Length: 145
Image (cartoon, rainbow, N blue to C red):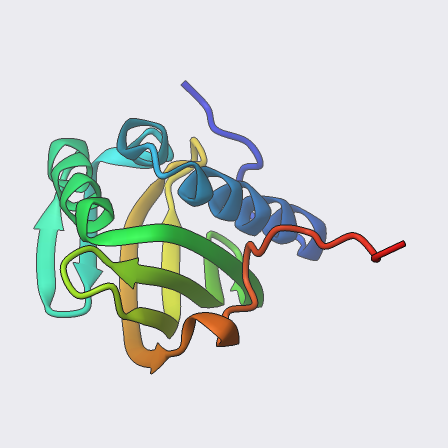
């Protein structure tokens, strides 16, 4: 099954792919996210290396059991042929300690001809923040009357 947009990417289709990834990750649904990756997808996530959709689901299930209130933004950094690089930022609250974090990082993606990501390489840093410093996914405020 194809997963458009397909490579080779244009600026427009690369932006679509990045937005689709952001939307999927913000659902915090491991199965939905894993569907965007090839069955034999290779991942490096910080210091973890694994492959395949089952491993992706297991990783994301574990991740989101610890990273509460997760909200993500991705930004297209570069693209060429079947590759996309993004800059990302997300905020989350640690399940055990209650500490808020903002995570900054980069991802490099490579896609197969069907539009599934076959390779994901991620590097990131976590910065402790106060709850009042959050800026991603906050409820919209309405002016006081």
